[in-house]
Length: 216
Image (tube, rainbow, N blue to C red; front, side, top):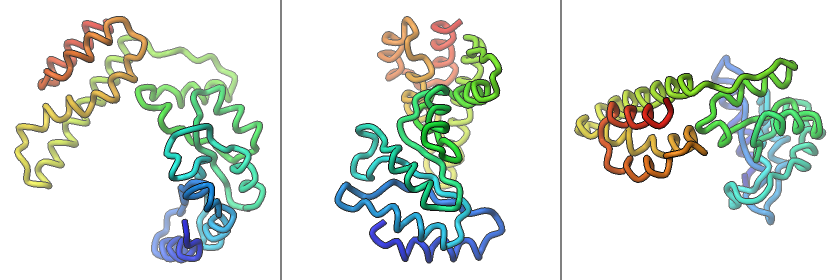
């Protein structure tokens, strides 16, 4: 981001090399001392990008503090390509209010979808005026099961590519799934106990059994 001209060159080169639409995801600056998103936005547009996804925090802030949607709205006014706002959107109602209040072309949801992939269906229902039905315990368990098993398959493939022992992949998948699981089960009675036990569970079947005992 210190070099908007280089960003423009990269976008232009990629745009010429592919037939798919090219977009850019970035933040409003590296820090409060380098808030050059106007220059970056123009470079992205002039380079041929078809959309800009803009996170309303500085890079050195990571996810701390509120996102600056006023700056996102300003960049939307400055550019002719679609601008999709991102940062701190906690739910469907907030996503819709961001669309209406800041006149962006779309809203990007990141961390709020962890453990809650149904947030997108809820957004669609709110947008179209239809009622939203939260997932049942059975549906939640089925999605958890699919997610965990696909993670395991991914880690098996990664072990083969990196020529690592595949026997460790199942335990690694259980460990890595921990961060997702606490979001899937947030607020459920018994989660605290499961969080203590999960550190000693190396089997997907055993982990799913413990989850089913909590959920179903």
